[in-house]
Image (tube, rainbow, N blue to C red; front, top):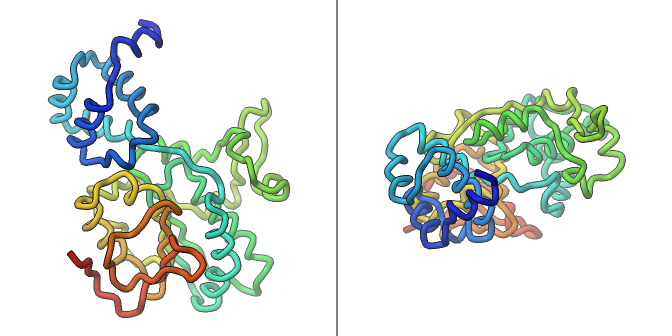
Length: 285
């Protein structure tokens, strides 16, 4: 069956897609704009495994291995380096210098839902650039996690197409990337890549990684693709892993649930929050 043929034979309308979202506990609002690509992956998966109806497919989700595979098909890897540059400027000029002065031994950072790694590598670049701007730096523990094992594998490889580097300065391209022999890919610098620890981790099914973090990047993942009732308890657990005085960054088009306590927005960035001291996790109902 050709690619065009299976697209005709395995068409999924919005109503069917909504049923699948409801079954998996995803948000229609989050997936509405990216549903075309996700539908295509789902239809291909149905064709490859011989599921000819949505009912058959939904029934198959009772099998854990099928459920996990389908959940991975809903992964959205759209991102780029230094996405939403205003928040990176605040990190570079305000937050990181203060952290470096405050913490002597180690700074812990978590990029939760890292997809193909652009966000984690952006922070690694920012951190590496600080080595010449200060007398001393604490150690960096930079954890990048995602529920999709394929995304983590590709992120660890650190290979990106030319279009992925769009918007980066020539200096950053020269220092932190090298071009493959055939010119098809640009590879992230190995000496900086070593600062990143990669982990397959499902925010919705597993507790947050142990320990406390001074900075958590929770961008365009939990708060976008899950309904309020599912993301609320998960967010509480994530905030509990944030060090007092630490920072939480979400996507520029995302918002925190109403009445969350002890997270104050930055005066010039509405999606950057600082956690108050002596915080007790609580979310008003």
